[in-house]
Amino acid sequence: MSYEIKIKIDQPKIVVIISVLIIIAAGIGLYTEKLKVNDLAIVFATILGPIFAIQIQSFREGVQRSIRTEHEKNEEKLQRQRLAFRQMMAYRANPLDSMFVQALNVIPVDFQGVESVVNAWKLYFAQLCKNKNEDPNWDEHSNDFRAQLLGSMATHLGYSFTTQELKDERYFAQAHLDDMVMKAEILKGAHRIFANDYPFTVLAYVKDAPESNNVNNNSTRVE
Image (cartoon, rainbow, N blue to C red):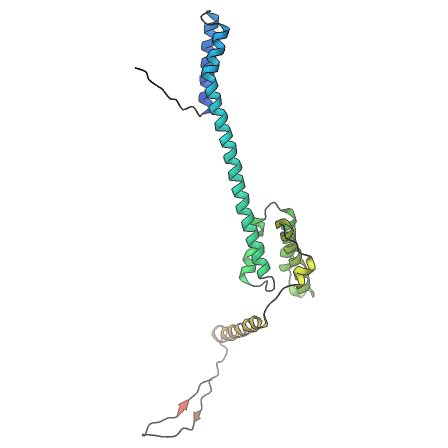
């Protein structure tokens, strides 16, 4: 009856211990002349050969796994960078939009290590933090720094745009602008009424209407 013993050796410490024990045993065998040099070579080839082969394979798999993990991280980071760029490009005609602001705020995270983009972001951020009263050309300068930032992002991601294109080629529908202005005026009026005790004027008047079946058809209109 024969038995087959399988030992899984995948820890470097275990391999080192086994190797040391084998070497010690081989040394004792040589010293006591129970083993010859040829026998020792056969022992090493038979025992240590498979062990080192397993370690080499384990090391190779570890390197491949690290490369694959690093590639996945880089791909995920690139996708986030592209998303931020597309979002800022989509809303560059209206940089006050929350979508543009969100993408702008994640640039130091998603583009960390990309010096050209981070430096352009710092310049644009500094401009946004300036008081408009201190810079009579605040809008123009902001547009310039915004175009430079988008240009740096585009270059890093492999897109081709000129700074002038990023400044001028943008579209914002007039109907959207009118809608924004109207909503802003409504909100300002509501704020004056409810927060500042601004008087709310109500005008009522009676409009002549034909009478029928003794029902009062007078209507009251509130403006």
